[in-house]
Length: 296
Image (cartoon, rainbow, N blue to C red; front, side, top):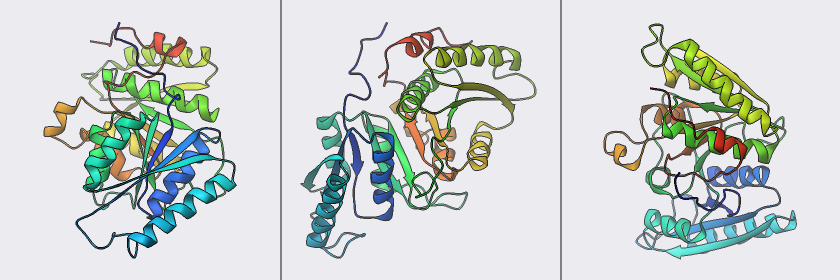
């Protein structure tokens, strides 16, 4: 069995803050996920440019950050900030490694088939951060006032190590939010990926593991493209959080996050959590149940 890492949930939630609507939505998401936890606002001042793209100047950015921090503390949230100056992406990664957060949150501007890919900072965090990363929409419903809570969690499963990491994160998130999980596997009509009956049986086994941990879970096998099926499921419930696993870092040379994770990050209307297979944060009944060998 792999060496155990620090339990997820023991570290703070870290928000990559830049003063944009996306980062403000990420703050609200962090508060909703862990209202009694600690939130770290990480801000890196790009020292080679006179102005930030989302603020008037450095002083205005720092004033805005202080305001965000004070607002959180007035709401009873434990919050602090980390500030650095230099190259944004490398320094944010450095802060993440030092803080060892249970979750990194990064804002995104838009979604849909015509949406631009995530910016350099978001791409770097999604690819390299030693923690799961949650992409939050500035205009999405996941952090909108008046959303219906608790919301559903949709987790894509292909029985790979990457989807095992996604299951771990989905279980942790469901425990935090006291909500339900939909386990979704996508196959084709020929059964060349995993025979539908086999996939359904395995999903139901995983669902029982979730239920034994007090998490309502349903198993669903659908036919078609994994990317399209996950996005369609998310579109049917825009307040839901989608959890996807991505391949090991070496695979990023070919694609940003792997085709499924990339499509979901770009097109899902709500928040998307990306988990790496090297992250095994959970311990307990659910995690042990997921340690069974993957399907051939």
